[in-house]
Length: 84
Image (cartoon, rainbow, N blue to C red):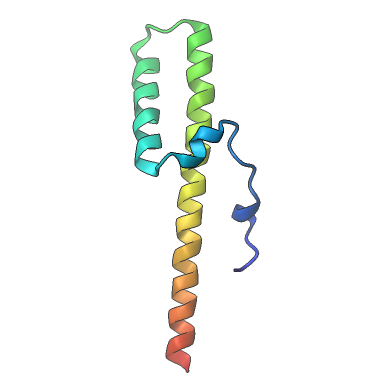
């Protein structure tokens, strides 16, 4: 596997994020955004939602980066197969 900077990103602060699927994380993120946009949260709650949202965004980006790496690896493998 190629050495890629994405593979060296820090793990999420919340270990439960590791088992969360992309769609689940995006769903929770949308809920947080809706609650924050509603204007009903205290400052403390808003900060907690913001931090959770930041972690969810980072987790989703990791998942997307991993998917991109897999696609690149498949493409390289297919290209190498075609050259043989």
